[in-house]
Amino acid sequence: MGKFGRYSEQVQEVINFVEQNFSLGTAGISNIHFPIHLLGDFDEAKNMAWRQEGQFLPWVDIRENEASEILAERYKLDDFKVFDDELGLLIDHFYSVLRKKLSGEYVDLLDDIASDLYNCAYARAIHGIDEEGLFEKIFITYRAGYWPCGWEGIYPDGNMLIYKL
View: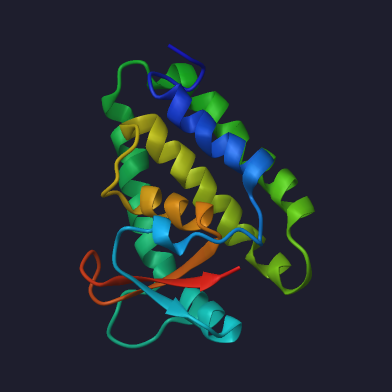
């Protein structure tokens, strides 16, 4: 077993992406195989990510709810304490690496991107690759060069809102 548990290789894929492949210029929307709605305006994308109003659950709440479910599941694993400390170090590492890669107007996205990718790694440590899981979809979106910034519809039904970085 690796330092992140039985799914260490899947966690390492997220780490490698952050360290080596995260890029604002990547394009690959054809790699996204779940319902999406592409936003073309950065201000609209930020508004949907941080201040979504109306009848739908805000994006921040959807991600926090999913993250808390994953964190609760860790206690069901007998060996989780062995790699929990290693996972805890990733958030600061992701901030440090991404701070150097984000510039201009995208610096405002640092908190979202670092925590999203940390939650992707954490979810993989618990479940491995779960293609139906929110954080795996978020990871796929980042790998394609897009920022996941909201949800259209009543989660989990509906479309992920994305913006081209």
